[in-house]
Length: 199
Image (cartoon, rainbow, N blue to C red; front, side, top):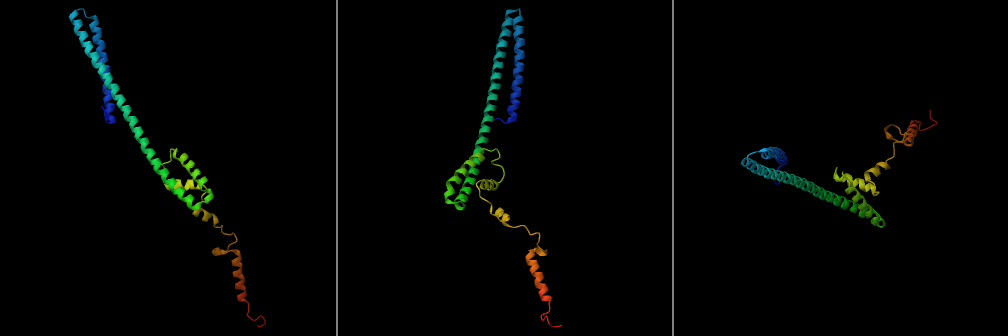
């Protein structure tokens, strides 16, 4: 009965249940017939038949219970196996994130902040590893999110913040107003006569 496919084990369970019900019904009928029999020999024959039916019923019930225990054991083993696989994956991802962010701390942080940042990283990773979605999504997204929690700013984001908004006074072509006015002044100067007294 061990290691049966789920559909086969379920079918066997239904058959054993039905067999037990039929055996019980027949045993009850045989018992009533034996109790009401007038002839001693007939009563003895029915009693022997009842004994055999009772023994068969007990075996059926024992087999049914054994099958159910086996199915329960297989469910427990499957759940334990799935949990072990998840723990392996969680540890692998945790180690990967820890290694990446530890290198970031050693290369980017001030020496006086190393211990505090490493402790914060360990605490954050412990909390993150308990989340149901810890294994979801790219590991790079997780590393980026935790690095932000530790206070490290993404260089691209930092560059975006340093770019000033275009001036509302900028002329066409994106020139600042000051440069545009200087260009107009230069153009006006070049349009005037070289000799103011001539003409």
